[in-house]
Image (tube, rainbow, N blue to C red; front, side):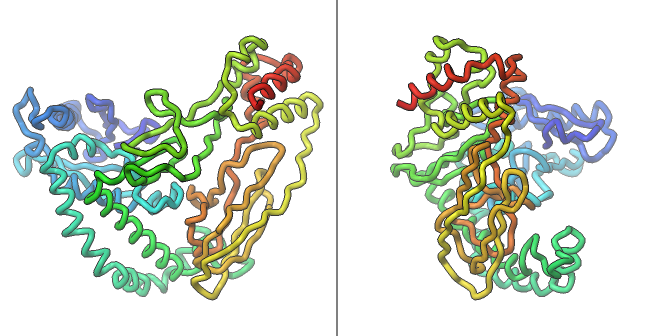
Amino acid sequence: MVPEDLLDGSLSWFYTNNGTLFRIKKPKYASKEEVCYIKGIFDEVELALSTEDGINPRTGRHYSEIIDVDTWVQKYLFELFFENGDMDYASMFYYKDADSTDSKLYAGTPWDYDLCLQNTMGPDCFPYFHEMYLRKELLQFEEVQTAFEHTYETMFAPFIQEDLDAYLAQKEQEISGTYGMNAIRWSKYSNTTKSYSAGYASLSANVDYLSKRLKASATALSNWIYDKDKYCVISFPESYQEFLVEKGTKTDFNLPIYADYVGLFDGWKDAEGHWYNHGAVVEKDMEYYADTLDLPQIFSADEAELMEMDFSRVSPELLKKMIVGLRRLRTGNQEALELPEPVVEVSGNTVTDEVVIRFLNYDGSLWQTLSVPRGSTLQQIPIPEWEDGIFVQWRRMDSAEHLDVNTYLLESTIYEAEWIYIPYLIENGLAISGKSIDEIDIEMLENVFKRFEE
């Protein structure tokens, strides 16, 4: 399974009837008959899983006669357990032997796990629950849910509870001799400091992280499997963040901010257009999508049209900085303000040595350096104030993991700011609207924005 941009010139591929794209790895040059054959199997199981009894109305075969349910369940659990950011996107492999050998379609093998265990998302302490291919459809059948629970009980839970720490200790010993060379090969070694300062500070820190992360994943996955009626998943796909919330409780997490390239972010809506209600009681799984006010439309509108737009949900800080950005662009004054120093409290000293955390400005220059106890967390995330933009979050330079108060600081790390860059936003809005900065009535915009602030 791959997105279109990862076809890489492949000659053998197909779309299933529900629109999922698959690339054929072997044979590399599949014949038309071979492509139609394997596509037909995927189409057959998709149709079977769309029925109440799981039977394909055209072929009369039950889904369990088409696929090997055990490997599909194992694959689903594997991806959830390791929080694989690719699980709904790419590198999901399936294989089919000749009908004379085996008539079923198998899931596997596991592949491409560089984007797992929070390497693309924040530390929400539960598995990444985006849908995988046909998982939701399969889990509607009671026998699959039972297989899901049984596989977790027999394959995953015993390993975590009994074998994980011993296994990690064994692997740490086995690879300790090559760890340094691996760090040099992948540019994690600093010739200046003679240390692995740009990556994990030590192999033991890496192992500690894996142990904590896998145990947290197992706990949450167990809750989701056995108490799924008690929990809901609130997800924000565009920001790669999801939250596991106990049903009947109120949401209390900080909402992510969405950085749009040509619109003013004004909140999150579900698929039916209902706004996210912070503090509302959660009763079911929900997905929310970023809503924005189109900047080219704003630049092209007169005052009456602007007053019909609702700016009440847009951050007042964003509205004010838009006006400042427009004025600076008109006068040609692009000099940025001096950046203030953050105030940060550190807690949770679990070990004696320290790690160095570096924060980079919007322009890539160093903003702040903190020395904190290894294994600690930040009680308060440093929030920069920049005239040119709105801060969104800190992201690691060597991965897409973002920093929050639950992040264990196990290694020396560099975080770069993700932010809404006002000049870029204005430039795109002007270009798409066909307007020049001199054609924008900045005073009118400011007056309209102020009315909504009141």
